[in-house]
Amino acid sequence: MRRFLPQTLPVWVLLIVIAGLLISQVATLYIVSRDRVAANDVVDLYRLNDRAFSLVQLMSGATPEQRKVTAAGLFNSAYALTVSDTPAVTSSIAGDDELAELEDIMVSRLSKFGITDARVRRDPATTETGDTDGVVDRADIGQVERDLLALSANFAQSDKLTASLRFDDGQWLNFTEPNTPVGPILSLDSLPLYSLIAGLVVIMSIWSLRRLTAPYRMMETAVNRIGKDLKSPPISEAGSREVRAAAKAINAMQARLREYVEDREHLAAALAHDLRTPLTRMRLRLELLRKSPARAALAHDLADIEGIASSVIDFATFEVTEEKNERIDFLSLVEAVADGFEAVSFEDDEAHSRGLICVARPVALRRCVTNLVQNAVTYGKRAHLTLQRSENTVTLAIRDEGPGIPQAQLDTVFSSFVRLEQSRNRQTGGLGLGLTIARNIARGAGGEIRLSNYPGGGLLTELRLPLAA
Image 1 (cartoon, rainbow, N blue to C red):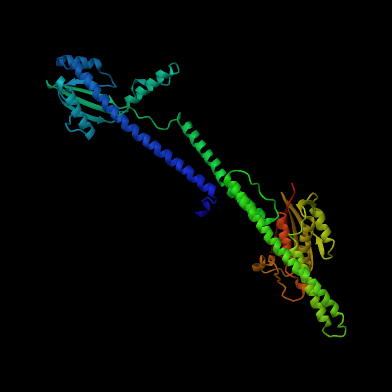
Image 2 (image 1 turned 90 degrees about the vertical axis):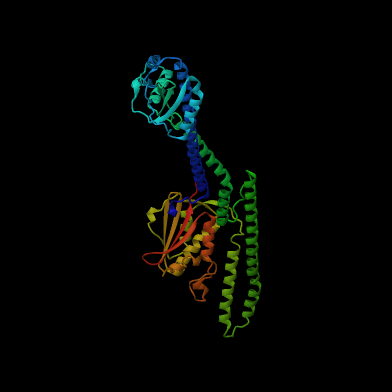
């Protein structure tokens, strides 16, 4: 269930806005529909009361026979009107409080015309279509006539109010009044307008959300870029006040991080560099111990210390060294590195394609490839290289013939000073900085290094770099 839910804040907010819009629209339409029904009901009661007054006023001074003649002359299918000795509404009890109150109002208002009793009931709609069937669809009538005929048909098929009024001579006046038809809230004419308004609200919501979440997207992009390259240029401090404040804070954070890292790198480089002076004195004094049995062991230890100092200086000064990005022919660079190792071979040499241009620091990228190839040769005896191109990425796959790396330690080896070879020999075990430097260089160029155990044995190292546009 969780995978079907939105994963980003803008989508959540947009869904909330759309849901709120739908709920408000449905609630509004429901309220309007109720108000229209209530208003129509009051209008229907008013029309019935008004018609009763007109009819009673017309027939109050006439004889029973004259009333029948008048009723016959006013009768039609939509507005039935009869005069008889029995009421059409047989029940003297009203169906609801509104009708009971209306009956009292009619008796009170019409008592001066001799009305002694009034009865009203509600009748359901009939299924008769009247004599307007087929006329509304005719092409030879105007729009006003078509609307009037359609309204007449709606009146003929709507619910009705039937009233029975008794004169003081015992004769009953019976007539019906159709209720006002309640048209649909949404129709084919109004639906496009509702859709247009809803679409505009959604578009404005999306635009507003993009404006509101712009600082978050900018911060995400900037932090990812800083994580890959601490020397990336600062972001622009333009836009709204919030955007400018976020950009300024990110730039300040990047500057402080860069100063912090550079201070530590300079400190490590200075310490390693300063070690060379006492090491040189120790080597000179070691020459005086020509006949000492400990001379060979001390010379070996001094060589290890000098190797450590050189590695630490290289690692510490990697980020400090200023080197501009250039367009590099990646295939030529890999071939140049491979030429320096006898145990390196290319697989699928015919598949090599030209035009693999990357944008990176040339010295740093050469060092990255060299470290990876050297690791494969040192720990895996031989290195088999393959270049693959996919869309905008080039992949250098390096497969060695060594024992591989335990699955749980594939990510650990990228940490500084981590060595899986447990001997104290620096020639076989190294210092544990090669993969760290290589991955930092790859990420600085927008790429990545991944390690995996090859199914046929050995370690597979993949260097992925983006191709230049």
